[in-house]
Amino acid sequence: MPLRNAIETYARQRPDTLAVCISGTSLTYGALYETVMGLNAALAALPARSRPDLTLPDAGRLFAYAAGNHPSAAFLLATCLATPHAVELLDPHWPDSLHQKTLAKLPPDALFCLSTQTALIESASRLGIPVIRVDTPDFASFLAPPVPLPWTAGTDIFLVGFTSGTTSQPKAFARARHSWRASLDASRIAFALTENSHTFAPGPLAHGITLYAFAETLDLGASFFGLTQFEPVAAQRAMSNARRIVAVPTLLGALCKSDPQDQIREITTAGAKLDPNLLKKARATFPKARLHEYYGASELGFVSLNTHGPNSSSAPAHSVGRPFPHVSLSIRKDGQEVSQGEDGTIFVRGDLAIDGYLWGGRNSGFRREGPWATVGDVGRLNNDGSLSLLGREGGMVITSGHNVYPQEVETALSEIPGLEGAVVIGLTHPSRGQEINAIVCGNAPLGEVRAQLRLRLPRYKLPRRFFKVQAWPLTSSGKPDRATLKAWLETKDDKLAPLGP
Image (cartoon, rainbow, N blue to C red):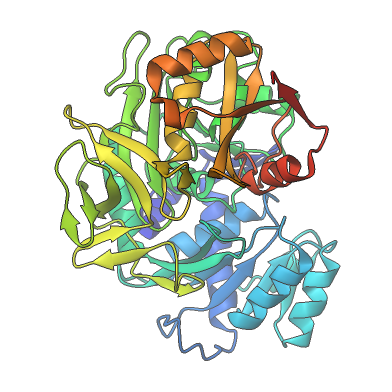
């Protein structure tokens, strides 16, 4: 059923049930529904701006949210999920200049932010956008008397999201309600979710994996636990009340530094390939949990899934799993499907993808070929039906005339005991065109790493140079920051220690 119906049902049937707790600020389903009704009425009373590239229903308004994991996120994100309004979800870690450009390109009818975000507030004021500071009495004053929620249509837009993809500038996309409705129905079964799947998701709500976990949890009528910012003691406290964890691998690794957590029964992770060492740690820390590792994209939704039990996995470790339920995969080159085992661009057919970008994706990222959609990732379908991810179009390294995808080398490195992650980067070389460089974290001896790689990869795919990093620089979504690592390589930064000759 639509999330509007779900939240209303839980609020009426069990209003005192915990819906959301963010760093100790708790909210019942009854209180959540009451505030959402007030927000809906207040937003509907705002004058609507004209936006040629984004159509909302007559009762719908576009509001921007930039306050990260402030407890007000529970009200505002539930409002976009359950009412005709849509959210323009801004990452609070963006530089001021990017916030300003985004507001100018797609001015919202209101901006919700923190009082400390002064540059953002000034930019909104110049554009005539009403500002509501969620950490002040502004928020309570903005609310209108609650009125019953109107119906929502599946074709209506509820989210304007942003993804950087292969470029440094975010690409904006709009997502319609029916795509997440289909996703929620599929993931409920695939991840074995019930009303008792109380979920701890420690990541930023501005990013897809955490926002989707929030929607999943409300759809189930379970309790969602989040953090205003990640801190180990607070994370342990929140995790003790949950039965499920949703986190990118870097945050999952931080949670594995604790005593065994028998109460956790399901884990969902995405955003980067789960390396075997982290899988081993997760199995030890969460001995009663199944771990669902999925590959997907903000533009495509779910693509493939690998579920790891205590002793086995549903797909080979080197793969990113088998097609997600109700999703078909095709590996294609020049508009034609290639044979099984051949490399090509990964295309997806299903009802989870967006229609296209609002801006920023003219020359890269999401595109369609008939009913098939892709974000430009390259891979192959193996003989057992699993999918191997090799890299992204444009990310290929050409060294001495050979084509090498960094993801394939990184996967081979991740299988070596003693390594806790790897990033492979191609740098310009005077005679080879490009040279393969591997940056690793861990204590495996270089000789053993080279020997293991020779067993897994042809000679032309072997890195020429290796570097060790003590701690990964991370993007705001918790992934290794490749741009920073490449800059460190180019400038010979001492944060990277050369290994061997």
